[in-house]
Length: 299
Image (tube, rainbow, N blue to C red; front, top):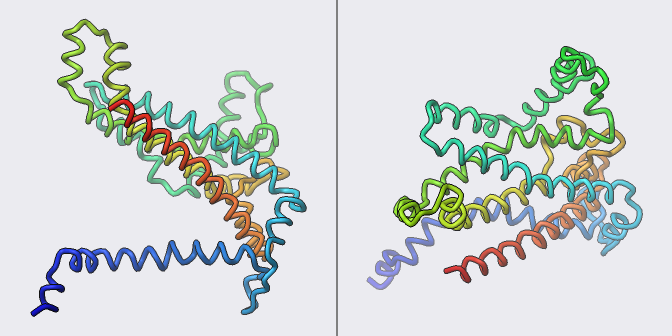
């Protein structure tokens, strides 16, 4: 009888419902994370069954003797700054426009969101063709309007390659921010909006004192997701440039993959992955705590 009651208790039933998801999470997320952390202190080529413990040597090699790491770190920081600034701002502008009662707004929402569901490697292939220096769409358009002096090898010039790839990234990701902001705008209290208008607030006043404060949780979510996605940028860069030319578009996530899977140094690749994880935590956690403090202070 006592066993039957325990089996029927809410905590036990809740644990049973959570168990499958927790097992999957542990096997495919938690265990690989722990294994990568341990592997960062090992020397392993990915083929032999034995791993040699080398302590902090992988980290020392990454910071002192890796000619690509610091360039990849600079590119990752620049990419992150641009990713937090441009896609959310453009998505916010689109959300404000498409939140209005305009003809065809539902098809427009679907059109702007469509790039998000396309595989990044497919986006990379499409934009690589458009950037082709001889037959690409952009250079053909520039030549057609007489701007031959502007024509460049957009993915072959190390001075512009990173920005060219980033434009493709913005095209693909801006719809995600737009949808999140649209969801936030739907939750804005129309009662407060009407009350502010009755009190004499104009459109800008309603936006500043009603809409924007109501969107603070959404802004926090969008910024955090933008930070995380930008720091682990991989597919679209790999598909468009592979890190070139001359490592000018190399990113930390892609360099960790290259070290492990292509150069056969899983220890050093794991060390770069751990560094990237620590950078992500060092950026996301303080921002999240700061945002939560601001929300608590305003309540």
